[in-house]
Image (cartoon, rainbow, N blue to C red):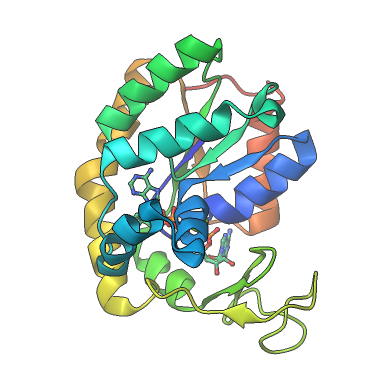
Amino acid sequence: MILLGPPGAGKGTQAQRIAAKYNLPHLSTGDMFRDNIRRGTPVGLRAKPLMERGELVPDDIVLSMVEERIAQPDCRNGFVFDGFPRTLTQAGDLERICGKYNFGVTVVLHMVVQQELLMRRLTGRRICKSGGHIYNIFDRPPKVDGICDQDGSELIHRPDDSEGVISGRLAAYEKQTRPLVEYYQSRHQLSAVDAMATADVVTTSIARILDGAETPR
Ligand code: AP5
Ligand code: MG
């Protein structure tokens, strides 16, 4: 399945929950790039300046990273994509890769959220350094300031969560990623989810769709 939506829609929050509920790997291309940056790999070196400016990483780099990941044995029974595909080229390439490995994209969840909410969600976000658990100082604060409830590690502010960079990321979404809504709609693979509800309500809506209670529209 694919979680599609703008920065701050809650893709990562929901992908963590859904992956745990259905025992599937959570494949976040953003997390993969941040990991490559931490390790100083050639992919990380190319991605870093682009991510710092809020621009997308070139399709060929994303594709080879994703293809390598889904060839791993833990992906045999499916996976949850968070932040991929993000361009029409990536969507086409995903289809080709899925054909090669005999995977089918079953459902694309379009996380619908008003743009005005996104700045608050992103500037207030804090991420756990070791496990990637997601908090928000305004709406979903940790019990102890700066410390992850789940594993006690330090919470950090993502470097691309500053107001100037967020604007660029939102613009990149509108220009390069939003066309995927129509692309998957025309293939009858898209299900809309109200991502403005509380995180628990959003999880329930997604689970209902995945469990087949609602057909894609
Ligand atoms: P990536 O890491 O994917 O970032 P993004 O798409 O900008 O999305 P975010 O992670 O910011 O938001 P999210 O939807 O995951 O929201 P979250 O759950 O954290 O990509 C980063 C960069 O990497 C890109 O800019 C690009 O450079 C590169 N990249 C990655 N993939 C790429 C690709 N395929 N192609 C090219 N380049 C790529 O939630 C946000 C906040 O809201 C949190 O504080 C959370 O607690 C809160 N929140 C969540 N849900 C709710 C709710 N229901 N109610 C209230 N608050 C909520
Ligand atoms: Mg995310």
